[in-house]
Image (cartoon, rainbow, N blue to C red; front, side, top):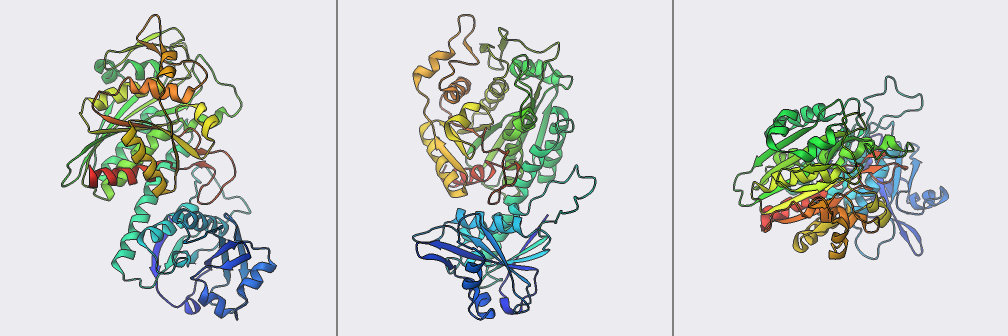
Length: 502
């Protein structure tokens, strides 16, 4: 893990392997962001001209490196693009620039970043954003590398954030919080990136148990026998086709002074073949990420415990592997859920909502004031909103609070409706309803299905992260290829809002 510290030393005297400055992209061309003055002075005032000669524009995700040729004790300057801004640079722009810089500085052990100074005196939020971006950009998953590739350069092992005063209590708190957030996102990313032959329901549950115990949480794991006894027909139905039986993990936390109870639910399909309704072979390897919602919930639980938030939270996390084995559930089967509801299965590849139904029903038995669920639920989310924006449905007030939390965290969220006409597509002639409806509005139909299991009076929200949870393309900002950790940071922002305001 990369270490994060603060420094108020003169940059001209500070020994490091690289220093990061910000460059703005303006109508008149690039300009140096505040915080770069000492570096520019050491280079005789020619920093901007030198960067321009190298093609720097200040565009987002751009990093241009320049040798200092002995003018500084630091041999390399990395100019990170911040994009265009009419006023103050946004926290998210700085977070992305910090992440891009860390990705570009592989092989440089110690990095000093001036990005917290781009708006002058740094706020706690901006300082946290720089810390998060720097550490997330330095993420690396190398569990399965028996030896490093010849051209591989390790990410920075230490990042120092330049601040006016390294002893400032607010700055220290922001840096500590950034490290805690990144620890949780790293856990989430690691779980998602783990190979499915290593991460299956029982092993996932065991890892959640260990992480929860280390964080001081109370953890309960239900095996297939307990699931059968408890009437969890949805989880059992989805897991029947696999030789590796399903699990349900319950994680509990109660902070000092807690006045509100919140339920968290996350989908944990450790691999999704689609079952009998099997998926195409192309890109099926990415279906190891179908447990991203569960990974986010497990990681968020460890984070709220680390931050000692004054709230009561119980997470209910179903885990199953959706395989087309001889005992697999079939189209036309009818499953009975924990709350007694029955659903006709028309498509076994719509399995996420089937396991979530049991989990939501169980979570509602705790009588929470709020219930938030997240899952890689529908391909329709990707069609509607793309790969970086999650769809949010549910109770109007809570949906809006989730969207606001997403804006604060920098994770893209978009509110979606639950039109009544979409619900009629789930009607079944043989059961209470079916697990899929018409092809149109597929994301909304998934939300309607889940809503059937939420007890009246509980405010709820569903976050569909099918696209944002797993990056199959090139890295960008602080986001690497593979698991992203979305929506851990949004959940933290939301939970703190609920803890403070009820």
